[in-house]
Image 1 (cartoon, helix red, strand yellow):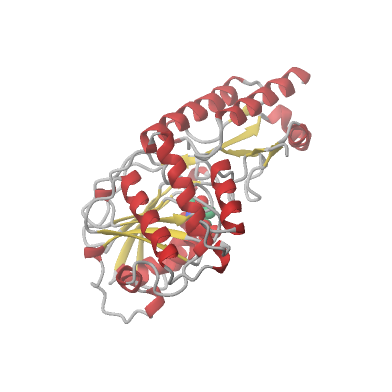
Image 2 (cartoon, rainbow, N blue to C red):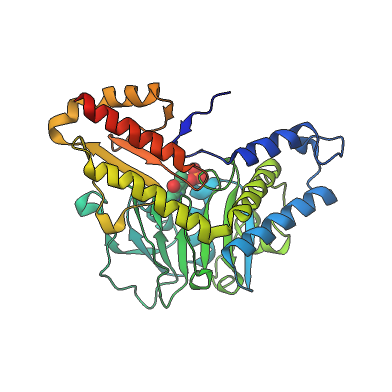
Length: 356
Ligand SMILES: *Cc1c(COP(=O)(O)O)cnc(C)c1O
């Protein structure tokens, strides 16, 4: 099988180790004579998988005491309302840095007042706003650390006086983090962790239980915390596959090593975007994402868009098309994407330039 260079935004490139181990487990999980999809989630085998996955998440991200790691269904999009359901008494603060943040804001409005502390919509979400105040009486402050569609990112762990809630769907494990600065970190697994279907939620226990409203059982984080993320049937295979990715991360040297690799990959690609006469990167340089590299054609070359996509496809590149709302190109270069794939894209851009 010839592998493609997979720049898909999500579901996305996975480590070959994760794919191989999942195939083995689908056939026979650990010599049990059962496929992983036949295994009871109440079996000791699965309890061990869940416990190991939570432990490795905790180890790799250096999650301090007082936090729980959950794997839930519903995608990151379900967290958009689960967070205000559990945390919002009267009002919450949101930083609007793109489409995902906008969607999170929309859901929060069902539960109370939303203060949009700042927005980069004025310049098409090409930057991260820096000058704003978070109201001291907000119940929490929500940010999106990596804006998957416009290719901007926050590389700092903000200091705020209210619980900080972060959507890290597209950059978890991408950089070193100080988890103690956050109340909740969440995201869909399908970009940097495993197959679609499991949502990771790292939640600080002492921020819960402060709202007056009644919370349906499945929406209440405390339900899942008290049952080790196995109150109902968890996404069994997805958790197993995520564990394989975490093992692979650890074998590489963990998050500090991943961060170094990501910086290298991003520099390689942005240097080419900046050098190549055909392309330009719309995101402000200091806020450029290391996970989703967005670029467009210079005005005089705009007519070459579909030609470049075709050219890239012929060279084995998948997923280089920009988000349907943006156009242009986007290369998602998540943790599992090898630098060789980035180099292949750079070569492709140079060849294409030489032809025009
Ligand atoms: C992909 C993505 C989501 C949506 O995730 P689902 O699991 O599909 O709900 C939310 N936020 C960000 C930043 C994303 O990249």
